[in-house]
View (cartoon, chains in turn green, brown):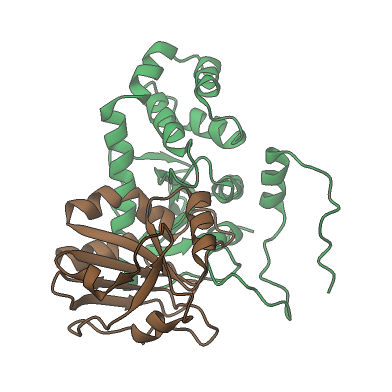
Length: 211
Length: 151
């Protein structure tokens, strides 16, 4: 009945992400009409992959980044460093014994700094620090401007000049674009989208499934 | 149900959110058009259907296809929506008479908004391919449009 609107004190982006990661995300309470018949509305939108897929999910290849214990179940994540739902999914994935492949799916219109962040992660990868940069990007989604990226590179002990040249290179832009297109062909339509055993889970489902 | 492939596009008229003459069947002739019917402007999504399609506009253009977003929202809502999303996809409004074009394309939902549907129309004004999401919450990926354009 009460929706308790409006009285919460301001919270920082990282508080918000932490909260998202710990509070189970419920569907709209019974009796409350959900006016948003769209994704992230708490609806399950996983469907048989064959329905909406044009090509199989690209197999794990040399450009992929993989971490997690050997032999653990493999999950392939399509995500965007500026997407709060991706950050929440990330935190939850951390708590599980899974082997994670992260692929870039930056959406410039919603998240203007997402492409730059993806390029930064790949530039760090070229210096052997993909996951370190990945974690630092998700840890503070409010700071993704160029100086914040340089600062992260410095903190990781990277060659910052090289990092900066690499992240602006065509080579890295192509690598990120290839991941984006591979995702599109496999039917990825929103972030985060997580594949587990070829089953696709999108949006809010991809976050809440890990609780 | 959404208009089927092989059928000629019906006569219709949609207001352009950007202003100017209405968008009608005549505008379909001589080029490939993709109509993206969506339920409502503004929805609490993180990255949504139109944003993903927007990332791929160059690739649609390479195939000679122009995308339009269609909803029953007023042009002012569509303009604000387009601005908020930061997308370039032109918006067309089926506001008055409300839902008439959606009905003509077979995608008017009983609650007065479009179903989530895609219609690809060839330069001859004939529907080349169409798709209606079985649930409004399902987001059809851009891959389906590419398959239709390339097929």
